[in-house]
Length: 191
Image 1 (cartoon, rainbow, N blue to C red):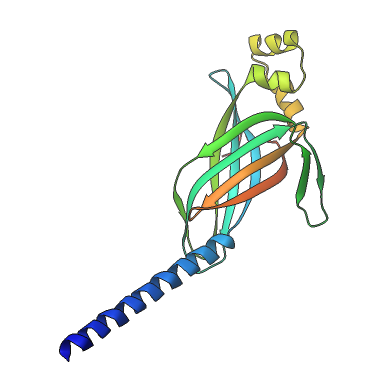
Image 2 (tube, rainbow, N blue to C red):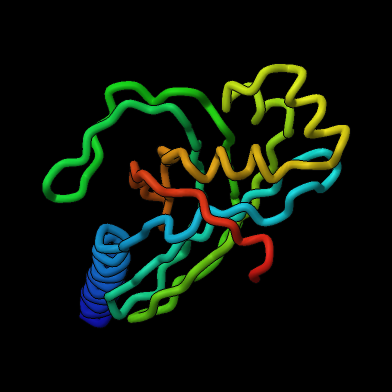
């Protein structure tokens, strides 16, 4: 009789453990699904670092649940000269991504605590000559900008163009798509 009761106890404990694991997974999945994220800054960070323009991408993550979330990956691309429409709800419908500007791929794990918002900075680099071509400057102008260490005109032209951000954010190994249009800011004097 004791052997039979011991088996039932083990079965009951196994069912309870499986239920706890399922409940935990459900809470984490629900938190990941409700994660809010948006690019809040896309700015010029440093004008000339080894012949490149350094851009800072700041993403705000908001976790309105009682469960901590692990962010696994950020994989975004930025485009200029895009064709898109903005719907009444603020979502963006892309007809043509335009010209590839830069990409950001980070497999940096960090935690978004429960009931908090956190901003995370990421940095990307663009060669000045590549940027000049994308902004449709002629070769002579680009060479003169670089030779004279005068990048302000190209930077100002970039700040006049809307930037399409398209890619994925991965939290708790679930992938979420982001499509957003931002303006380039001049963050070169700010931290």
